[in-house]
Image (cartoon, rainbow, N blue to C red; front, side, top):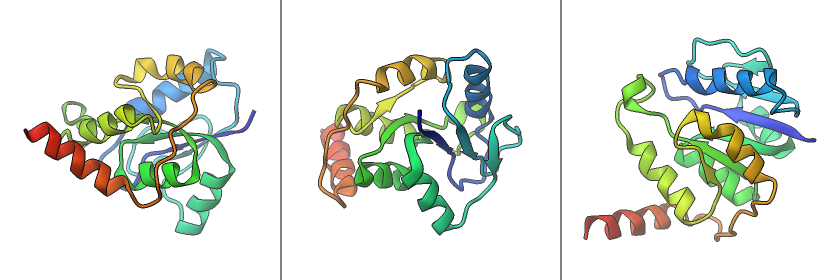
Length: 160
């Protein structure tokens, strides 16, 4: 059982509901792995080991150590996980919960799901189910540096 790296990025709004759900899954025994969280501007303090922010070197080290990455739907994190072939579960931040200024992360998560780059939990309550599905999931390999092209193609197709 490897490390689960929960990373919430550097956006200056909280993502407390994801951290609370991870804690709940650990307490219920549904997550048995060691968990490390990069919490960003979240106010909730997880019970697992955590830090608000990591240096780029520290972040890359945690990412390389992780067998599973649980991340917000940030383009940077998605691209890094894709490039490293990491198994990831993406959970979009939502405007309605005060986690972002708009809902663009829903669009990014849709690309992840459609292109089979990772699994998407559209609601934090799906996280346990997605962790179980992840055991058999193999991320699709996409050429390095192609995330911007995938997003542009997706947006252009949606606008037609």
